[in-house]
Image (cartoon, rainbow, N blue to C red):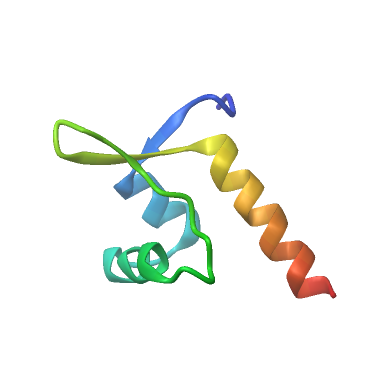
Length: 64
């Protein structure tokens, strides 16, 4: 998968092994800074490169 690809909500839930409710909470938690989706025909998609950047930032803060 290229980092320029987008994934939908179902793949996002699988990626983080979480529920749609948790994703909703992440999106509404300003301190968490979770990437915002784009909407196409009412469906949400996230850019993989933004998710990877968010993951790196979270790992860096968790490590110290």
